[in-house]
Length: 190
Image (cartoon, rainbow, N blue to C red; front, top):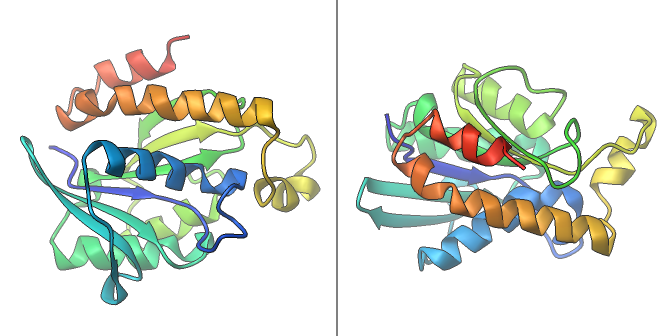
């Protein structure tokens, strides 16, 4: 089964543009640029959407216009409208539970308290979609998490995240080829 919908998670608005929580948007903006995709605001999908014709077939890109905790509204609406199954969806998001600059790729699983993933799971009715997890590190105390994700990373951290985004983009051909063994092998290596 190939990926037909790639959702970058983040918060809309210029005040959030460079915050850790928008790592999924950073990835999707780069991918859209590489694929020469054209963003269109689609009210019925609550987001910015691009349709890309690929050798593997049509792929939809979406950046929800909702805040992070309502990401499922956009992802669910687009998936339902175009009859895209959960296992044909890739959500790209920031991940507190892995070191800054690390990458993890998986199908399904829990949401680790990530409100964007929680909402997508609720709207799709299943956790069985792919996740590309871009490590942003953890502030060390769960009471500091909200302030941490909604702030800009240091220059050194941003460089690590940008490198992770670049490496993730190199894995896109493997992802699009549905080579589910090669993707983690490539992404999880140093």
